[in-house]
Image (tube, rainbow, N blue to C red; front, side, top):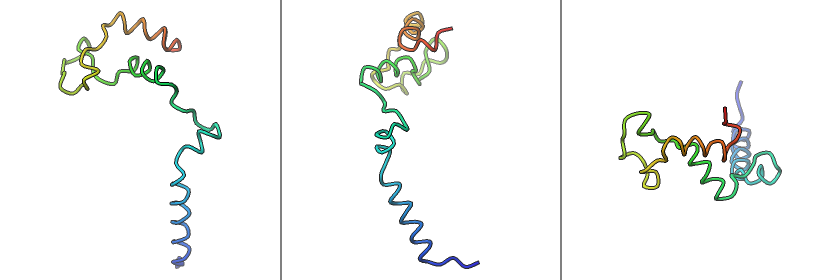
Length: 90
């Protein structure tokens, strides 16, 4: 079956138009939540530190960004998880 060029161009144009709107419309309609205030994002980043900890694996300071060069000690990390994200508590 042969697809008309106008159908392909129209479909691509519709996809580009829909994609250019971004996610702001989804945030405004309530479909997805915004990332939250700055303090919440920082606390969440501390709790969910994506870089390997020196006490859990090899200590490689070269791959950590400057703000994460000195990670929090284990007791502080465990205490913060229960305070910042209570759903992570055992």
